[in-house]
Image (cartoon, rainbow over the protein chains, first blue to last red):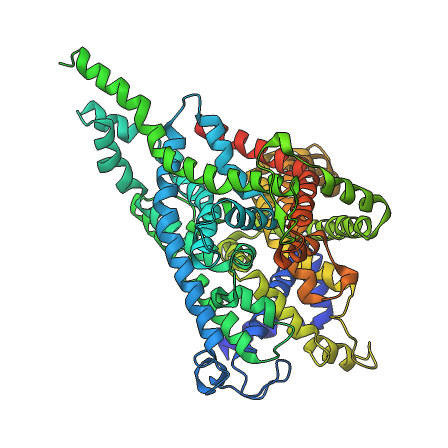
Amino acid sequence: MTVESGEARRPYSPPAARFKSWWSNPWGKPRFLVLFTWAYILWSLVPVAIAVQFGFNAGRSRSTWQGFSLRWYVGDPNLSVLHDLSLRAALVQSLQLAALTMLIATPLGVALAIGLARWTGWGSRPANFLMLFPLVTPEIVMGVALFLVFVHLFGFVRLGTMAQVLGHVTFTVSYVVIVVRGRLFSVGKDYEEAAMDLGASRWQALRTVLLPMLAPAIWSSLMVAFAISIDDFVISAFLMGDASSSTIPVKLYSAARLAPSPAINALASILLFASMIAITAAILVMRRSRKKEGTEGSAVEDFARLDL
Amino acid sequence: MSGPADERRAVGERRWLWPSLALPGVLWLVLLFLTPLYAVFAVAMGSPDPIFGGALPAWNPLAWNPGEFRTILGELFTGQLGIVFLRTLVYVAVATFLSLLIGYPVAYYVARHAGRWRVLVLMLIIAPFWINYLMRMLAWVNLLSTDGYVNQALMFVGLLDEPREWLVGKHSTVILGLVYGYVPFLILPLFAALDRIDPRVIEAARDLGASPARAFFAVTLPLSSQGILAGCVIVMLPMFGDYYTATLLSGSPRTNMVGKLIEQDILSGAGSGRGAALTVVLMVFVGILMTYYLYSVARASREART
């Protein structure tokens, strides 16, 4: 009874009127923006959710739901991601490329970030510019350029996995630099200088003070490099040589219109899960390091501000 | 304690440690970024291979042969090529404008009014970044197919009598795809710019008698103009080189963008020279955008350092 009485005291108003007063309440938040933003979020995510859903479809259709099954992931003896050799090869190729890229681009990028942040000599400005350049170059330009250089100049690099790794590292390095540099700026030079006042050499200060403080950024950049590489389509497509080094995005491109099977949706969903795991890990690492240091704000916001 | 030898060592280290840390990365970028860009020029300025029909690059600038460019410039003003460039320009302009219309209110809400929802909303807005672009297009291929949800829904409410073929050469579908694909990239720089605005400035405008609309147009909008510019450049650069959106969502030569011609020329092998020359033209096309963005980022990073 007591629970109901609170409701009963409020005068009855029809839903439309209640909506109108909620909408035009001058003291509340701008309602239009609230609705608009949530509508945008639904629009941006629901189509993808539906595509993931159809990867689990029991039937062959990608537009009529026929019940849940894992047929297109593992069940189907010929057409599932597990059993269709070309789909499985694409999955393996994507994971392999992303892992190699991550392992090469991260050390390269971390060293470059530290070097560029501390070096103030005559070469530092052009070097900084060079680092930013790949970020603004349209991918197709980079794809064409790498393709032509491997075909006409660096003949020893065969198109295929090796060319793809070299290409992926080239455009990933700059992202690693951006992630690490943010942390470098916030750490500042004080700790290193303190270490050097206490007798450490520059190199010792770097190794024993700065690198441990950069650890969270280094972990994040590993994950970011992985996610960026596994997401890439253009560079992989230009440098693949033949179909045996197709990656998942390349497969999506060639099969989206031609091969109408939910296995493509399943393959795309696996890619989605892989990059989501990588990114969540990156955010969690950043969040833990923030907690340890008691910094205000949230790791997600930091991430949004990175301008990747 | 520290004698002259120590000083000298410290100075020597200061001079060499930082550049040598940067060296591997710089070398990598010179070899695998600058050299390839030069290779594009060399191939574009080269001559057709008389035996195999491919391209013979001209590495020496003295041997450059601008034949391909002459052909392209001719076609740009008279032939099909001009139409493709114009179409690319229109697609990019319309899609960027629509993205701004959608992105600005969202960024504004997150930056100023999201309150306790802020982190959640930001996470949902970042999510599309990490969903593969082609998968997001695949999602629309599914939705817009003849028996897909969009046709089903439109027929259910009675807007359509029979399913429409959305995926065959429709300009509107390609533009929808571009907007859907690139809006998230526009929202983040807008968010960063709007978030930096001190709310007290806007309150001051309101206290001085400005209406909400006036305060927005006289204070918020001008203060966020840097973010608008940066965001537009960020989405326009990849859009100019985009070829996969149109291929997936329309697959008809009627909606080809410049990138598609480049892809065809380069990957077919026969037209490497022409493809390379088109790439150079595209770079000149987007060169202003790239320069603007490079300068603004370099300036921002210098400010962050000092």
